[in-house]
Length: 391
Ligand code: ATP
Ligand code: MG
Image (cartoon, rainbow, N blue to C red; front, side):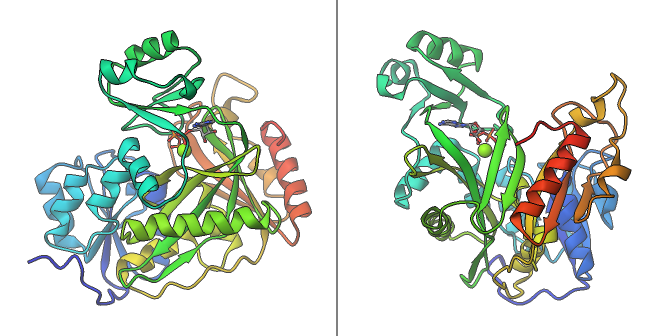
């Protein structure tokens, strides 16, 4: 019998499971444990950031029947931290316990083509695009989509699986480079900036949102998130929140969902993509809001009440990539955390990853302050100490 729609509250003392052992799973485990839950992580990596801090660590792949059975046995509810976890694994677990988000919602977020049709269905504008799965579709591409970005429909993250193309020749060549897998060609849009909205929705349909995050990406990877009053014009803030909620409601979503947007030069808001889990751009919530995105993930999966997050500090988040470990030498060296922690309002979060590698997300730094000006000034000082280019 499926009890996936169970709306009974799961009280602290129970064990909560998460598929995926990355940093998002680690911070989920921290939130769950702070509320008195036990945690179980399924990830085959021995030293996964979440596995290292969880009460239980099941070291199997996502499709391992025995691993999934063990997780179902241990847990009262399960969530995911990894967007490319097979939907079939979530569906299998949902036969015996509540799973949020559902396999069907995750399957849509995993496929750029399905995701874009969902945006269209919800009446939320996205970049003009074409699906390319066959040579005929390649030949039929409208010139108006060039220059564009060719993105693999599945398994992309941090700008991976993307090629920028200016001409039809580059498009054909790019598709070959991507191995002729299913792709989406998106028109290259003139971006004024980028933002994202995180919403949390319960099984009873209650929905709350984090304040709108203003994001700066460099080389396809999130670098800085700024959240304070005035980070974006009020009309864009309202539009982004309304659009994010309709995308979540349209999916009948349960859990934490991030919706990423582009703000174009002409002020128009365009949805980029969704992530069916807490998001890097929401990490500031740990120190600047009265409830974090990970606390909300716990509340959603246990049917505890969702309260609208209140921001108590202006904040700037800096992502800490492995590159910072190689600022002065080819051998990894710990950045000057002593200097960073001398800055008022600096909150250091490191994910316990053993090896620093370039472009690898090692941690993040949340700077909080009474005003936006102070938060920015301190964050710029931190960036200078760490060797992050000013923003
Ligand atoms: P992540 O998983 O980190 O969110 P991703 O690999 O899924 O990234 P996208 O979000 O699609 O990739 O794109 C990464 C970045 O590339 C965007 O944040 C934006 O800066 C730029 N970009 C993507 N699509 C477009 C577009 N159509 N026009 C202009 N810039 C774009
Ligand atoms: Mg993205």
